[in-house]
Image 1 (cartoon, rainbow, N blue to C red):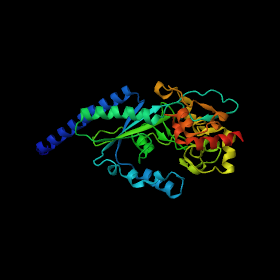
Image 2 (tube, rainbow, N blue to C red; image 1 turned 90 degrees about the vertical axis):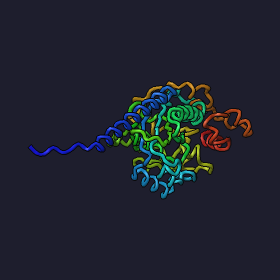
Image 3 (cartoon, rainbow, N blue to C red; image 1 turned 120 degrees about the vertical axis):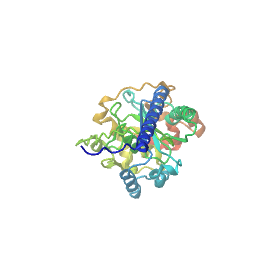
Image 4 (spheres, one colour; image 1 turned 180 degrees about the horizontal axis):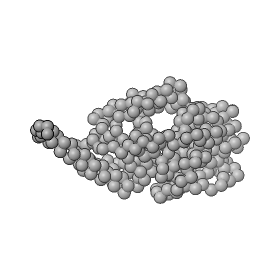
Length: 333
């Protein structure tokens, strides 16, 4: 029998403290998840605040190739690479997803299709309100914490954090694909100084040999798996771009009858066979744009005030009257 090693009380104490830390943080995480679900979020995950290098390198390459087009705000690479530049002391990101899918009626003659996400009120406003409530809950339960919220607006790589949190995987169409809802989800985040246990469950590449999204993109905007050239993307052209749309691309837009945004690469995705209608009435009530718009009525809007009165609170405000009328003229001509 060998001589027994003495028990190190410091080691035991350290282990007990570590276990207690994990227990407390797990309870905090469970409370946050419960509150988030009660507020209407469908999925909740927890990512480390550190973004893995391969996401940063892919984003840098995308910018260096000019794939952001006119979206100058996308060039804030350093903030995306280091979340402590946004929130000093950031340790964790609470990642949230909300299903927004609904069935669309057949497109009528003389109408243009509106992307599903833009049916009713602007989701940024709806989700921001929920995030404020969740932040309030966190700060009441953890008074010393600092938190910063984002809904598809700030210098953060949302899909990377959602993937790190184990909510799903990034597909070849660059959309974030979840097991529960396919890719029909809005993503949002709260960056926090809380040191919460993460929920990363790597799900691997979701697409296998499938190339339906790449093959179905009318303009060839998916230039490599997971890489979009915005300058060719119908969503970008009909929403973000303020320039005249090149004739070759305008022809493709007319063929697809897409007035605002484009869902084609999601509509053909096999993962979206598990799509299910959302259960969030605030996303579709009130109906503002709906799923399609009369092109002649769009052209008849004479002033920006008329446009505001028609689409106030809608995502369509981003394109402005000039942009939407440009799109409508392409579909009419």
